[in-house]
Length: 119
Image 1 (cartoon, one colour):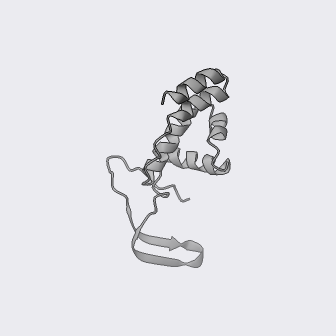
Image 2 (cartoon, one colour):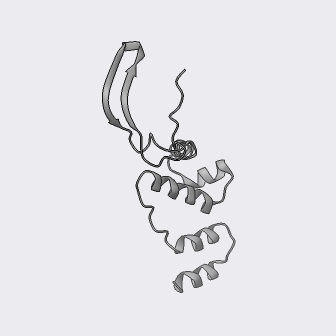
Image 3 (spheres, helix red, strand yellow):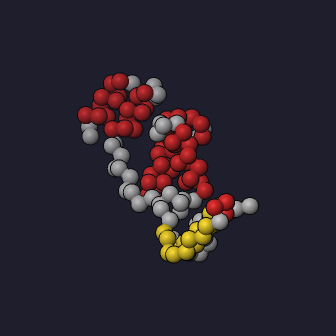
């Protein structure tokens, strides 16, 4: 029975070079040098996170709810996923945290206004 790719491979930072593809039912073997795309080399944790992110249609708040993690933790995992596929995450808008606190009722509208004006 086929096993998942052993990625990342311990002690190796480079991406693997694939030299053979086998299609057993068609009895076809293709030899050459093939590279894997950025998604094929994701760690199991990042792949699971990506699957969940896709399942909830990109809603990080829903990911937060399902995983039982704080929004900053979920956002950090999302940023790590972006970096692992070669993208730099967007710089967080400092106003976002104030708006999240306001949304959760942890600060008053007046406090939110004061914080937003001071930035």
